[in-house]
Amino acid sequence: MQAFAAIYRLYGRACYNLALRILGQPAAAEDMVQDIFVRLIERIGSYRGDAPFGAWLKRMTSNAIIDALRHRSYREVGNEDIVAAAVEKGASPEATIDAWTLLQRLSPRSRAVVLLSQWEGYTHLELGQRFGQSESWSKSILARAMHQLKVGDAGNDSDGDNE
Image (cartoon, rainbow, N blue to C red; front, side, top):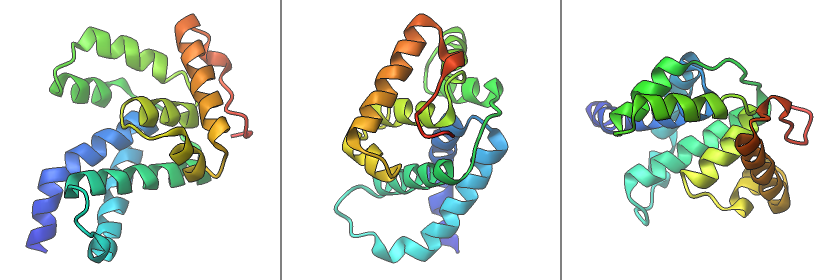
């Protein structure tokens, strides 16, 4: 248990920040981190060491978030924790609020595609597979989301699967 506590101290905040950026809800992000660390206890034996442990855990976190988005709907978003996390990484509060204000207007799935492809480096093939969709679905969602962010029309967001 001491080892898991040490892992949590090292990686818990990064998992929480990723979940918060996508889900937009502090309580949902906290629940997700709890779920991730329960899964970690069950799956630690599957870690092969071909990637750094933090990257493996982040991938596990991303996959769990996508699974949650496929089965639930997250609509509420809060700025305080998002801004604090971005400022902690060196971003200005004003720029973070502006970016987050735009992103929060996207649906959770569209926001996930934008953040996971642009921030976390997922490919469209990986995103399509994880969401149970095609690669072109991911490309389409990203293109529509980016267009909506540019023109400020994110209020009319639809990711094509009747979320």
